[in-house]
Length: 294
Image (cartoon, rainbow, N blue to C red; front, side, top):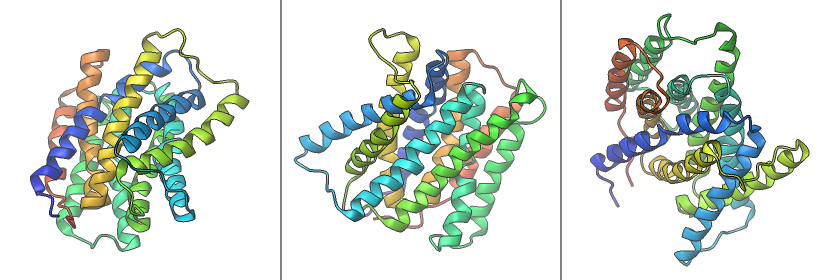
């Protein structure tokens, strides 16, 4: 069944607006000093519950075969456990707006990986679209809008590691396939794997987070988990329908909306260069077309 182009772009914008608030919520969540392993436990637990309810309510099951386990492990490591560990670590030291900005580098990693694996063909228009995103990043992290503390630059590279993981994940899904599963089933399996990885690590480090006393950080964590679940399921769907490079363009919108949410909810302020960068991000998205539609 062919998916109209406008529907794919609409999905990108909805994901961008929703996912864009995540850096703000994560910033609030880490403000209480919770360890990343403890945060990862709850993000995976929320995803397991929501994915499980939807999967079983639809009369479906979770296949447990070797190919399916490989799929769950790959998505869990590249799309959740490792990037969340890096993001939660960096978020404790970087402004939410900067975290949102760094997400826009996902397509910069996805494009060369896709080219190397043969999923995308070299295209001048796509290159120019990616270049728009790169220029936007330069504008945002320039001298007037850069890090408030130069000593935090190391955490920028930590956050970039998460973008690399996301770029690799999209290509992994294109290469390995969905193994006949829908996005919710994939999330269900990947979240179960993530939970099995995170719980022992959190237990060994004494970083399990009890939610018996819900404060702003804990509520922000749960909210971020719910939002991430919905947008991530949509993200997997878009990858399957339009390819990893097109899907990764959502990073530009996440950046734009992330900056806006950070300003509204956290009072962060940026210069006119941010708005120029946001315009370039939109141009970049428009220049990258889906390579397939199912």
